[in-house]
Image (cartoon, rainbow, N blue to C red):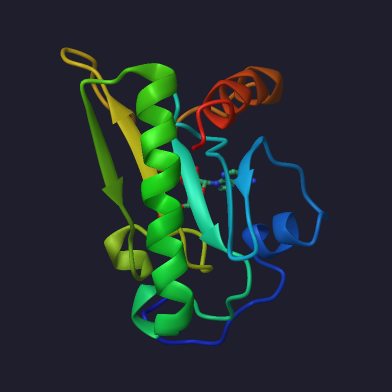
Length: 145
Ligand code: AMP
C-alpha cells in the first residue's frame, strides 16, 4: 500500500468503529475512539482514531478531523501517564506501508516507556490477552479528565 489509494471501508479500525470487531475501549467522544493496541509494543500501548474519517493517512485528513484528534490524543496520553506512571511517552503515527503503516485508517500511537525497558517490534509482536487489555483500558479510562 502506497501513500495513495482508496479508503477501504472494511479495514479493521472501520470494523471496530461499526462494532463489527472487538476492542478494549479506553475513551470515546463525538470525534475520537481510543482503545488498546492488540499487538502492544509496551504495556499500555494505546491508539486514538478519528470516528468520522475516510482518509487513509494523516496527509489526506481533513483539518476539521485532525484538530479534535490531536486533542483526544493529548487527553488519553495524560490519562496513560496518570494510570501507568511511565518515564516517557512516545506519540507517533505512520503514513504508507514503507513507513510502517499497517492499518489504513488514520490513527495515533501512545506508547508509554520505562527506563531500561526495551520497546517491542511494531505491529508484529504477540497478540495480547483481551482481558488483560480490558483491565489496562479500565485503569486508563479511570484517569480521563
Ligand atoms: P500502524 O502499523 O501504524 O498502521 O498501526 C496499526 C496498529 O494497529 C498496530 O500497532 C497493530 O498492532 C494495531 N492493530 C491491528 N489490529 C488491531 C486490532 N484489531 N485491535 C487493536 N489494535 C490493532
